[in-house]
Amino acid sequence: MKPLQYFNVITLLLCLTFFVTLGVVTLMYAWNLDVSPRMRSEWPKVSAVTAVFGGMSLISFAAFWSQRRKLSWRWPAQGLLVIALVAGTLLLRSILS
Image 1 (cartoon, helix red, strand yellow):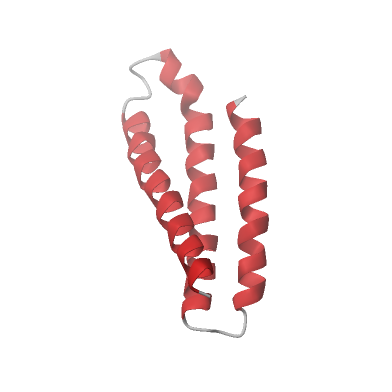
Image 2 (image 1 turned 120 degrees about the horizontal axis):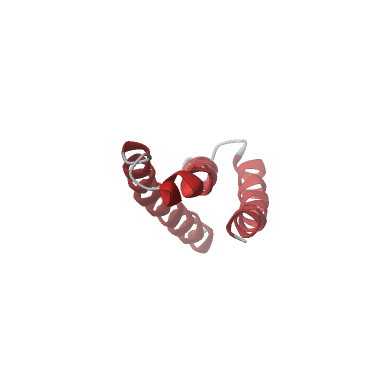
């Protein structure tokens, strides 16, 4: 189980890092929306990407916590994490293209 724990914690930390960083960028955009028309046009993409990483952070935390505590719902949470990683990747590709 150790490799799975490492995968879960690495996934959690990466998603959380992106979420916090993009959260700060989202706040900066929100504060300065009227400064530039470009910021207003990019606002939906930035907030959508932040939301995707927020959701993936929550799901990866659930998978990490359930595996760590050996809870009864750990395998469904692990499956949900794999599905969320694939869906998040496809969603980010569609948002950013």
